Length: 174
Image 1 (cartoon, helix red, strand yellow):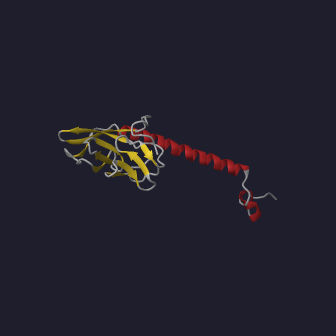
Image 2 (cartoon, rainbow, N blue to C red):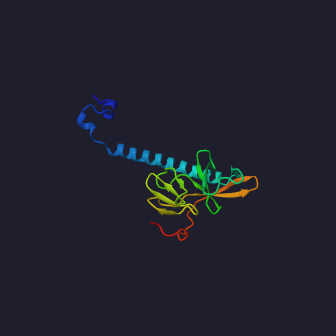
Image 3 (cartoon, rainbow, N blue to C red):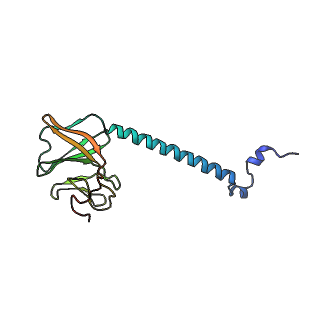
């Protein structure tokens, strides 16, 4: 009498259930690798589309003369979920950065008393002029939002990576 196929495929004894065959391990590794490949391909495509979105038309982010000296205005750019800060320093210059800390994505806030951007989650500190890391655990500078002041308001015109390789602008880190 021949053994039915289901007996070969389904283990009845619990002792046999503890072991994984080479074939099962191979299937698991191949399927996991394919899943990771699909996920990374999706992230690559999404990053490419996001890069194209960063080259969108200028967006008005503040009224003329806003924000006041030493003040900050919040806006979103280039997508509604991308929160950003527009800071007018006490000397009147405009600087804009992503509000997402490059360490663990906490919200960065402007400290007017210290004239710097701070991440309260893990004590990260960024330059308000360049976005460079001044202290704390963030691994890279904040992405800079290119802004242009016009007669009818302040416009965001693009997104810059923020890592220009020049750490000499705002003093050394630490």
